[in-house]
Image (cartoon, rainbow, N blue to C red):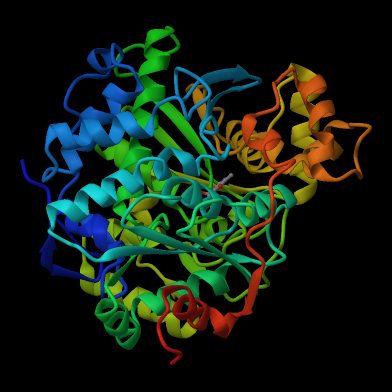
Length: 498
Ligand SMILES: *Cc1c(COP(=O)(O)O)cnc(C)c1O
């Protein structure tokens, strides 16, 4: 059955999957959503015989119906290969009261690799299918992890260029070093004098700027997005929820049909939305536990039905979740409004103008799939320490936020359903906070100089992604003000100044 995509703010115009991937964001500012969410093609028992790549094919062919099987196989085989440092691609590790679904075994040791290692292949395939001959220019705002994962994915991919904007003082030292040392003639990295929301808003503005688009088109460029709003990122993220469930089936933790709970450390709401889609496809999932850090805008939303970004932006030890405008929430709003594009448009307008909106009581009832929690900086650090002392397993701060949410949910609900926590980054990416939390002696040193001690304490080998940073040359030194982003893009593409 063919699936088409349309905007959350207008359901009239339909796009094929490849056209939606190519475009990234809708022209009206909305996000692409599928005309319907397909059901799982096989029972979880049948799927449990498949490896990661085979599972990916089963899921992606349902959503990307205008790709041939051969094209999808090509994309999948090139994405989930030896770039990952484990044959399983996504291992499940039991520690304390949860299974940890390790999504950080790709090239840049964060979960963004799960989708960004396949997106460049999906996108270049989509360009061929749509007879698009312009050079694809990826514009990306990053809170730290997307930027590097997107750069790694698109670096030297023919027919593409990529510009990444990160908050100059809002990412971890390792994240920053990963980005400014990025190789590839088609890459461009800019530190913005602002926070992540500023970067994201700036990128969105460039997407909807008609003049910029026209001038870029005349010069042979078309813009696209590698942010988690692209359905080419969302759909690959559904795969690991299905995969994790089928592994639990295989190891006997659940029997066919028995539910699990997923806990997801959340920022832009992309990862947990993929879990919701997995549930809507028929995966036995009871609760989706949405974990926030001190930027608890989603926690408040789930408690009150009011989304309110008017609050101070807090810089935390989990920077990839330091977000007040959670882009992918728009897709949830669309679904819980009964797929009502007009209502969604109104809410998003209110968000843009007032910074806040309140959903209806009927919509609130539709949120029963979710439970929202948040963790303070202190709780997060304590959790890394206590889990380490109890089990030897070391969490990064993002996953630790999720682990706190999990504890609180279990305490409040008494629910004994097995829990799977999405482990979104390697602790090596945030060594400063992690070593402090587990009481390392090297605390205070440069981040990269703590790797040996972390390895000794955790028993986990230092990832290649860390080792290669040590001698890497800095290649990107450009910084700009929030209102200078467009100028930098024009410069990168050789367009005249506006
Ligand atoms: C991006 C990111 C998140 C948040 O994921 P969303 O899909 O934006 O909710 C959490 N943890 C880490 C390490 C990340 O890189």
